[in-house]
Length: 197
Image (cartoon, rainbow, N blue to C red; front, side, top):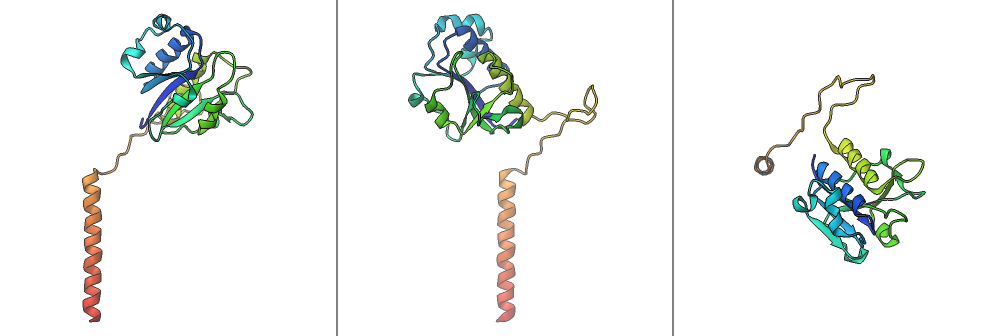
C-alpha cells in the first residue's frame, strides 16, 4: 500500500478509548497518532494500549486546533456525523491522510472541520465508540487502497488472485528514454532542414 496515514482524536477524555484507538492504529500500520486538546490521564493509556504504540510510533499532542501541524501534502479527514459528510462506503481515501475523530460526547471542533479536506461518516443508526469508529475507518482504508483479490459473488474464498503491484521502470531508465527521444527528434529536424536546404 502506498502513502501513509495517521489518526487522532479531538478533545478525547477517556484514556481507555484513546489507548484502544492507538493500539488499533498500530495494528493497521499507521505512521503516527495524535490528540488535540486531550483531557485524559496519560498514565492510564498503557492499560488499553497493550501494544506500546507510543514507543513504536510518533505520538503528537496538540493543545488546540491552531497548534496542530501535519506533514505537507497530508489531507485532514474529519470523521463526524453531519448532513453533508460523505458516507464511508462511497469515499475514496487520500494516499496521505490524517483522520481526526470527534470527542466521546460532542462534535469535532468547528475550526478543525474548516481545516478538513473531507468529512466522512459511518452509516450507522447512531454514533459508535471513538475507538471502534477509528477501527472501521482504518479497515475501510485498507480495503480501499490495499491490493486484495476481488470478492467473489458467491460465499467463500476469492476465485481470482490478488493483483500484482506494477511498478514502472527505474527513474534513470525513464530519463534515458526521454533523452533518446529528444535526440532522435533533434536528428530528424536536422535531417529535414538539410533536405530543404
